[in-house]
Length: 441
Image (spheres, rainbow, N blue to C red):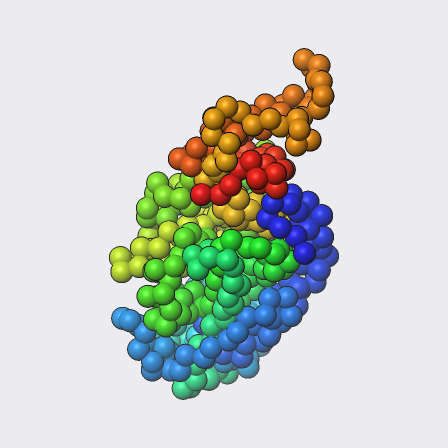
């Protein structure tokens, strides 16, 4: 077992990109939605990595201003053209069907079919991702180039072999206790069919981040993991746990769009200047990669629910290529070729560093108040040191920390005075804590 005061380099390096890719390959072909067998199958696979507990919210259940919809499952869907060609074949690409399409079988004219076809003129090779969760309808998605070639004459045979019935929406969660009742929230969604960055990168990042956190002992904070169908799943979960979370959530992130090689983007919570923002900005500033910080906005993912007026939780998100900002978003082009498992691993490590910074960001107090402590007798200083000795930097940090350990400055404040990272102080802080020169406020 490891402590957050360890650097955990070996712990992070143990994440296997090969295992992540194998997990991705198993999840990729499954047709997920906000309910149904595909969602449960995906949860079952992910539970091999992160032991989520599932709760089923039954159709018709009122959750705040929303109602749990009917459960949706699909067997097949396709169109036969007037010349006998099979197009929009669900079994070749599950984005071809409008997610949550109601069942339909029949022959239709081009005019009748056209209103049920969705395409992207500005992205002509991409199949769009379209849903109809709360409006019973049917439809197909097709790339614009193929759409242009379709005959406007004759009859098309349409097959939508789906089922809408009373069932449930599945929500996964896990609680990892710490010394404090204060909680760090880690949330992601599981509901999109085959998309890589905008869907699978979030659950995979969360699963392996859990693996890291579960191996750390002496956690100061408790950790709440939520994996749910976007919007409706989180609203359902909040209907059960929202009051508790409002009182206990110290900070949180929504994990999404974690998988490509773009620079990191941090979207703030509504608080804008809170503890979450302080820690995240500090860690990002001391990473080698470029990054961007943007204000909270309503367009996005489940941070909308956590930051809704009644809760206003301190929850933001760290993404790579952010939703709505890349042309592959919500299309068939958001595929395995778009992402990098090395980049996804680096995202996991960044999130782990954020949590590590949260855990060690104490308000240190020097137990020796009058005059500086005699460090040499405690083995913390060499007997002599030359001006250019490489140890000088560490010794200066140690005295800097002791000087500002007044109970009013946290470790981030102290590190930033020297334009350094809080993570640079881990080893020094451990030595001073062990020698009882420093205590935690």
